[in-house]
Amino acid sequence: MNLAIRDVRRRLARFVGTAFGLGLLLSVVVAMQGIYAGMVDDATILTRAMHADLWVVQRDTHGPFADGSRLDPSIEARAASVPGVKRARPYTYQVIQREYRGDTMRIALVGLGWPDDAGGSLPIVRGRGLGQAHGEMIADASLGLAIGESLVLAGEPYRVVGLTKNALTSGGDSVAFVSVGDAELVAFDQPAEATQLERSRTVDRLRRTDLGRTQPSLEDLLADPKWRAPALASPPLAAVLVDADAHRVAGVRETMRSWGDVTVYSQDEEETLLLGGVVQRARMQIGLFTVILTLTAAVIVMMVIYNLTLEKTHDLAVLKLLGAPRSRLLGLVLQQSWLLGVIGYAVAYTIGELFYPMFPRRVLITSTISLVAPIATFAMVTLASLLGLSHVLRIDPARALEG
Amino acid sequence: MTDAVRAVRLRKTYGVASSAVVALDDVSFSLRRGSVAALLGPSGSGKSTLIKALGFVSPAEKGQVFFDDRLVVDDGVAQTDLSRLRRQHLGFVFQKANLTSFLNARENVELACELGGKEQGRRRARDLLSYLEVINREDSYPEMLSGGEQQRVAIARALANEPTLILADEPTAALDSVRSRSVMELFRKVAHDRGAAVLVVTHDHRALDVFDVLYEMEDGRLRPYQGQGA
Image (cartoon, rainbow over the protein chains, first blue to last red):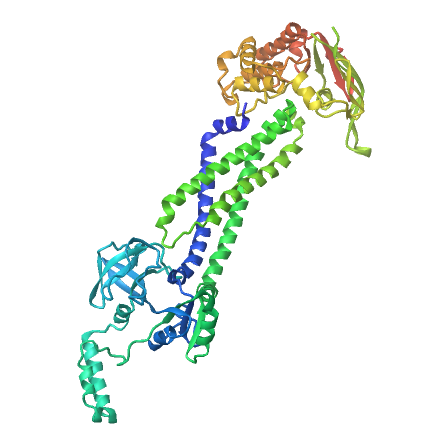
């Protein structure tokens, strides 16, 4: 006769309620751990997705994510000419906010060095990479855009040709990828009035200089419809991504370090910069909260199990008096605790499957969490049972005689 | 008939030094199979202590207990596995029925059969419930049973392992006089039909005619019952 099952059967509603409550608690703990893992992953996913050996950024900056980085576009050609470099790609990064379909949409817009970089290294789950220099976009699925849908930025439509999964910034913003040229168009988009005013101011300044007086044809440049107000030169890049021969990465890096205007980071260093700087405080905050929540949940779970055991004190005393062997009593407590743990974990798993995808921040259930969560649950309920059992084993069967 | 249980010069003390209370004072006692004995006496006289000593729940510090003429406790030291002895050869009935709350009537008896190593526990449990005339409540949980029904199930449970000795500690304290007598008669029936020795602690003087032997305790000493006012 299985006493654990019979006890559960007799108090089924309460047992199920307790298991459900336990499941809710576990789901919160797992969610918190998943949010933490998601935050860490989000912080580095953008750098990892680019698959670059070296990140060349403005000297003495930690760009492009940690702080601003402005590189002269000529760095791209300079980097490409270094012996051992297979490919140098321009890279821009900016966060924009637009109203779309009545909602506020925050987009981290990354410029890819098309045609060398069409987004082939990105985690594209539907569609394709960029097929042309202008007017196409790869968007993260979390933005809610569909393949073929167009988003108007800087007055120009950008058609979504590919969808990525979990391409997010450390701040949780969804990422969209366009060509560097398009990213710059968006970055330096200005209303026509502002462009006109800036153009006339520039003409005035030009006419007051020797250059303008000796070369009046320069004014023709300002009449070019592609002219952009801030400067006549090409807009700066945020970074240049360098792919090098595997055995020559260190040498390439040394060469670039000798340049006075750049700082060079490896992929790992770039990720460390993000984790140690950009998301450090948030990560620690969430991390500490996760630890506290996990400990609190552990104590609650253990107290629930322990109290379930204490409630059986009288029944267990009677069973002891009847001569029930110790293994029988241990089985009653342990089996019930394990059943509670299994059901609780199943509830937590189901809740996770149903509701985690709806969370505003990504809940990343890593393989470690998937492995550790059930083991930790099993350990908690077992430990609580053992505490309860130590009590059970001390029960004097004479208590049953006391009525 | 042989002695089911025999106790020789049991002594048990609660407390220490000046506050020590002698609960059992050189108590010697024996009870034959097939006989039903009543143990009377005021509260605090040592009745429950004797029951606990004879049931191997709380052994006396001094003295010996023989079970089926085999020494099982000597000066408080177990000479055999007492838990096993309890589940195979002893039956308990308490003041409250103390049925296992999450088992129905039949399962309570069936569990005792199982613990006592008896086969076909379910059939045996049903037979015992029929014998005690509560078979119609076999699927009821303890809280659904009346006090009298609970005690009948408790007696059925006590009989489950075909015990040599049944110890009952004030089993009718919570029952009215009619049901009380009915339970006492059941003990007599069990003793006579099944050859068990039954020792019943009771304060109820109205059903003493049911018993074969009467004892009383006072201040830890045991003696034959001499009647009220003796």
